[in-house]
Image (cartoon, rainbow, N blue to C red):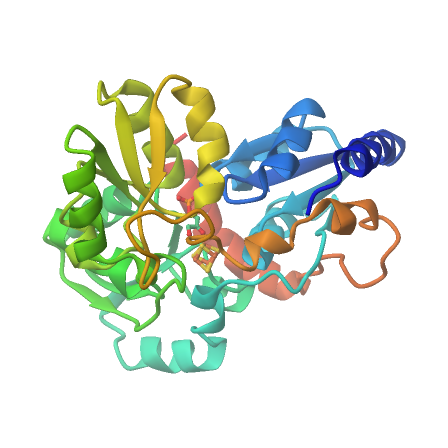
Length: 322
Ligand code: 13P
Ligand code: SF4
């Protein structure tokens, strides 16, 4: 249970620490609203994973505090090696990253030398180093369409649902690794249909890490930033949202008069307030943030040779669309 007085005290304390250490918070839309608000109020950024990757270069902070999951911290370190990159905890990982071990992935690539290797940002630095391209969900479709227009066949990893979505949208020849997000995989088409019956005027917004049967019901499928943009522009009075509920903080700012409803996950009934919350994103707490400068186990280091190799496909992503 939140103690508002303690929370306010912690926020004042963290703001002073950020100033003292010339540090900025880079937070993902899925983190706790209190962390997103702190990032906003202290000149940091709150964004999708693509803009998180871009942020470090444009900001003069010496230290970046990445409030997200580990691959986001690694990406920040690879792109800005001159900065210190800390995370509230390095235990914050991602099922996609965990489900794609570097050696197995490299063997898979070796079996398909005729394919261009495109990996989702939700991977380790070692997996990125084996790729030709890195993409986030904001630009996955465009990059694959571009490669398809050049006649290239794609090896995609690790998210099979996002890979299948990109394949359907572009018509490209895509061979997928078998990975999934434990949060998005829980959304169920029947649950969405039941909810839509209760809110017939609602638009359904879906992150394409969800299964095909759920994506097919979407009025808009897209990355976190694209879903927020859709909520800001669509005329519907309600939005049923199939992604992590942390997104509601920014989405509600974008459409203050609209009602946001979290899509049901397996076994959650028609509406659910505690579902769809990434357990690793939830590790970014104020308690962890208070200790971020004192711990000895939360700095991101990437081997320079590995960083050099993973920088190439990452830089391609950043250059593809500015
Ligand atoms: P976005 O790139 O859409 O922000 O998604 C990141 C993520 O981890 C989705 O689960
Ligand atoms: Fe990974 Fe899914 Fe969590 Fe995103 S929501 S960080 S894809 S486990």
